[in-house]
Image (cartoon, rainbow, N blue to C red; front, side, top):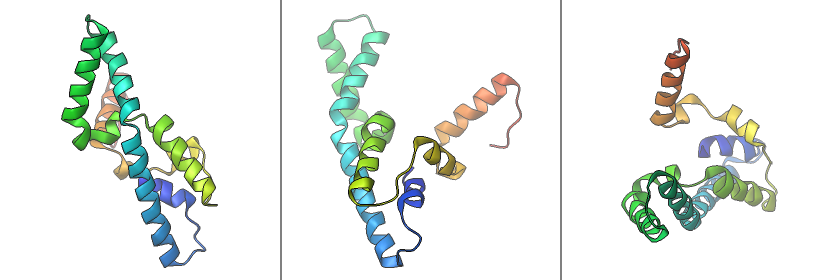
Length: 137
């Protein structure tokens, strides 16, 4: 997702040094937003555990915290709400730094197939198979 955002917000007229600097700053902001979304990820997991398990709220909270501890380092991006926690912050950061703005649709259009995780490709293949559609992905 980050390469697509870079392509959308960086100015082609900037020199290579400026583009490299903004790309590095964007990466740091992206990582900061992910780290800041830990509590929101926990809240969403509590809700998921509440939906999936019949137990008391304390148990749901404990299970959510444990799941985050076990998976945060390896699956942060999969655990955060990218649209709410990440994209909103990146858009605000780009605006504050007088970079180009972009819409969610523009980002979706800009993302290239090889930039998507394998799980997304797998899901698309399964959906296509279910619908009887042949794919090349």
